[in-house]
Image 1: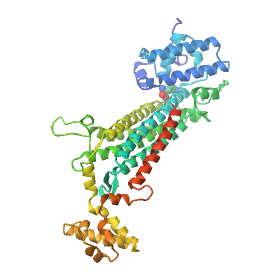
Image 2: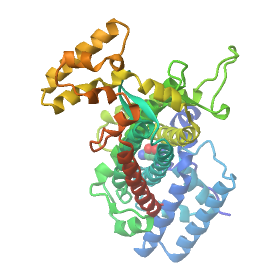
Image 3: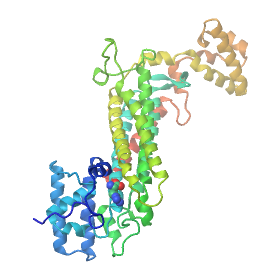
Length: 472
Ligand code: ARG
């Protein structure tokens, strides 16, 4: 067993030992130990590359490999022991490797700095996080689509300004979220492409005098290309900002869905209910059944938006290239990824079990005022300019409201009095199912169109699922 050397990586330059308060303040091991698998995988690839270019001999490579495999086992078994002098995951692994493999551990650091090392670990993490999140977003899309398929004929009001606007179907409404998530998935895959560039070989900032084969390491680690500028490589955290902001936007979408669930579950709307397994009660008011999951999804969105702000603020004042400030990038990135993944999962679950009160929704959608636009469009078909038609129907709404009636109560004579262009057809406007069915513009709510949209979305989902499988 070789004698462990001085504890610090910079023991040659700095005399004496580091003050405890400094060790505690500078350590990031509590957060970045999460990167242990990436760090070891990276080290294995780096060692093989060093062997290939003749920088280390076969015995050294074997010692490094054996030591690193042992370290993997220790992490897997929860047996890896950190020491207070371990500054970060990289120094912890290096320290342990020195205990296991002696001087071979030192050879592993040939041509490598923790600056390019941490950037590489983080990009490896980022690539996987993007595809994992995309899969979770896909699962939520799938849950929404399943509910949409079963709610194709269930009518509900569409809202603008939170005022009842026009009749649609529940399926049509749910498909709006499928669209948002589709853009989210595309953003994640785009962020992943930008993660897919290997910084390793950039050294501390200016590369190396040694003939490192960066392409070889990139191939070993599954990176699409190597970075083009060593200064940028060690100081760039754009990829972390991109992942985190993709997460923030996913959360914003989840938060809007959550808000609607909260509204729909209120007695005022009464559109939806959750089974007892997915609701919570009040410690004081015995009658309460609360949508806490949705509220927390909405609340945690605040934190993820904060994570984006943290990262942008962290980077904005940094002179090139690496500065220790960058160590603070991990907490917001990890938090955004974890919170978003958990939120997508729970929302998929909530969407799957959400009960819709079809009658309450139908009642709300049957409000005759929701056909006011349809009445105006009847006049347009007879050649009346839309603005004029709008005014005619608007006046009828005002008039009927004034005497406690609705548009549905008007007789043909009354319609004709307002405009001679009204035909008897106007009396049939108020059949709610027919009203939804005549909205046949592309992207509209007519049930047969929505059925096609669902089928198309299911096909897209299947394609995306295959693409994401490839990225595993
Ligand atoms: N733990 C650091 C980080 O996460 C990497 C170490 C770089 N340290 C240094 N003194 N150059 O960014």
